[in-house]
Image (cartoon, rainbow, N blue to C red; front, side, top):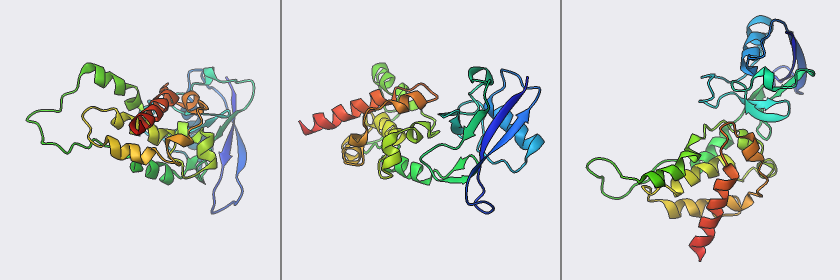
Length: 235
C-alpha cells in the first residue's frame, strides 16, 4: 500500500524556522513500524533526515518522538495502529529544544534525572554475598524499573512545559525506584530533593505521563506514593 508522511524538518544552520515536509512511499506493509518508514525515507529519498534510533526493539528509548500528536516510540508504533486515511505526522518530542529534524536536546532531562541520585546508596558494611530483599519488596519496584528514559512522559507533562525547573515524571519515577528500595540508605536525601516546589508537588495528577508511557507504567500512581511518603515523613 501507499502512505504519506509529513515530517518536521529543522536545520538551524540552513533554516531558522521549522517546516513540515511531505514524503510518499509505496510498497508499505501494515506491520511496518514508523521507524521502518523513517529508515526508508532516509535511505531512499533524503539522506539528510535526522533522528535518533538504536535497538529498534523498544528497549533503548532512543526513538521517542511525536506521531499524530502523541508521544511514542517510533520502533514500537505500527502503521496498522494509525489512521492511514490521513498523512502521518511525525514531530520531535515537545517541551525540549529541537536540535535538528526529530532530534531534541535532552541535556536538561538528564540533569534532572541525575539530580535524584539514580543509583543505590548503601553506606553500611558490605555483606559477604548480596544485599537481601524479599520478593514482596522487589515486586514493588519492578514496574518502575521498566522505565527506559525515552522522555515521552516528561515531554507530555504540562507542568514540565511551563516550568523548566520541575524535575518531571521520569526523574521522579526513578526517585521512587530507590526511595522504596529496602536496600537503599539514602531515602531522606532523596525525599529532601523531591519534597520541594520544583519536585513532587509540581505534579498536578493530569495522567498525561501514563498515557504517553510506551511501557504502560502507572507513572502517576507511583508519584502519588511519593507524595504520601513525603507527607508521612512530616507527620
